[in-house]
Amino acid sequence: MSASEPVVHVALLPSAGMGHLNPCLRLAASFLRYGCKVTFITPIPTVSIAESNLISRFCSFFPHQVTQIDFNLIPLDPTTVATNIDPFFLQFQTIRHSMHLLYPILSSLSTPLSAFIYNASLISAVVTISEKLLCPSYIYFPSAARMLSFIAYVAVLADSDSAAQPHPSTFIGDAVQIPGFTSPITRSSVPPAFLLQGSNSFQRMIMEDSRKLLKLDGVFINSFEELEGEALGALNEGKVVRGLPPVYGIGPLMACEFESVDQGQRGSMSWILEWLDEQAEGSVVYVSLGSRTETRKEQIKDMALGLIESGYSFLWVVKLKKVDREEEEGLEDVLGSELMSKVREKGVVVKEFVDQMKILGHPAVGGFVSHGGWNSITETVWEGVPILTWPQIGDQKITSEAIRMSGVGIWADEWGWGTEKVVKGKEIAKKIKEMMSNESLRVKAGEMKEAAKKACGVGGSCEVIIKGLIEEWKRNA
Ligand code: UDP
Ligand code: UDP
Image (cartoon, rainbow, N blue to C red):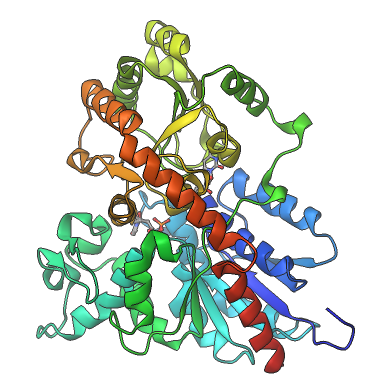
């Protein structure tokens, strides 16, 4: 950028959890690559240690281009908070509740803002502020284009319901047929909290956000034409909802250098990689149900039995608690020493946060049993690894369907949601074998990897979009 050109300055605000933070930082890195200045607003305190560690690494990697600002949250009145609330969802609520503190932060930045980009779970709270800012505002949507279409379309469904107070449990019906989509979203795939009787904060949030989408200048989504062409087309051609702003498929968002932990601080990652080095190419099953899903003890034993019975070597990341700050119990206590030693004969099992991109990129990994978190999915696509999804919560059945349609993954839909039943080891072994031996899945995953590299390469869709926006912001400066 020459000295006479205006500085392009982008502010970003994530919400909670690694699944929402990773795409935010990767998107920030996409702008940093083209010389933009970034202000990163950190909601404090973060929910997990993994989040605060990653933000520190990001900021120290770009000491001149990135300014980090603390957004000190005001805790909610504990008497109004349900005791069993998901800690990440509670953080969304806390950020929304602290929103009046955001405007003073944004309006006092010394360099004028070219754009403000924030997490999708904050739309209706942020819109009131962003309308006062003298710059365009965008959300980044940390899930599939199929999920965005669902969120956008629920307001249309509610408006076409004749009831005085339309309720999702009624207007969703047996399935939602979104215009422009070949396959409907069945009722059983809808996030369960959305269908609960009565009124809950999740339903209110989705309904408000659905309407407010129209007020944005654009939506960034971690997807691309070859992966979700139908959904991206339907969104951008006005089929889903008329008047929707542009949906920018800037995926797959690549893992960045700042995410890697230094050799010396790697902990168990060093020996995990050494172990992978000893395994034959494509022979290992990697298992992880994401950064915020704890696996119930009843399920863990059958998971172990399934992995052993599958006959493949495996690398299994187990979470016993939702939030990493609370992980204390040993795995051996849950599995018992006999099963634990059998597990160790065939595989590696760890409890801590791993460098997932390093694992997925290792040639020994031949398949991934995933909860269907959209970041995990796109990372797997990037590496050309076949996927077996086992949705646990929220949007993960909708993402599983998206990935099944793309041809790079299979979905064990008969297993239901993660907590619905204990899936037996035999069934798990059968599905793992199906994934690992499915040749067409492997071929398709390889093709999708090529398409992903093209989308992120020189002159690819990602570069075209980011450069185009930077130009637009400069013109409007
Ligand atoms: N992740 C990781 N190590 C772990 C668990 C998760 O690096 O041990 C990363 C993963 O690569 C992904 C993010 O954390 O980028 C999780 O996001 P995703 O959407 O897959 O699922 P979530 O954890 O939000 O359910
Ligand atoms: N949720 C919850 N309590 C509520 C409302 C929602 O635990 O009162 C859960 C909901 O089931 C969902 C998560 O919080 O799994 C938030 O969902 P969202 O899709 O916004 O986050 P994501 O799954 O994309 O990380």
